[in-house]
Image 1 (cartoon, rainbow, N blue to C red):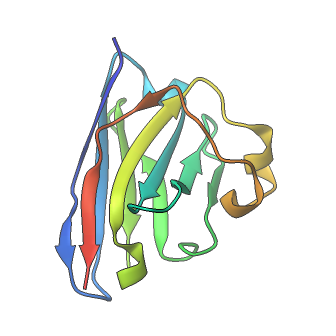
Image 2 (image 1 turned 90 degrees about the vertical axis):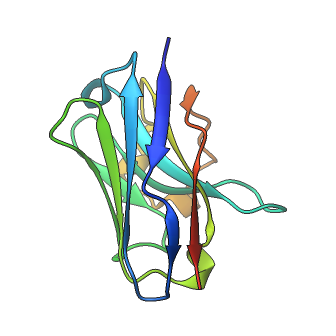
Length: 130
């Protein structure tokens, strides 16, 4: 049984930082494609950052240079470091995992590839930037 649990969300002023964590059970993150997504009510879910098994990453253009996705030293922790946060980053953030990343992540930003629908999802953590 795969379970993903996000933490680290909260309220922060513009320009501040947060680090989101995703703890997994039932799946080994280092063997899986893993991503962070966000959703605002009334809008479609948006891919924020994805990391493949070999460490290849891709981002949404709106967060490039500000957000960094990584897999923690512990086998089953995935992280999203968010710096220079903006009010437009306010959303519910979800982590997702799947056995495979689409090949397009090696060449394109997330804005330029079809929406990703991972097999496993967490319950989300709220990020509010004022």
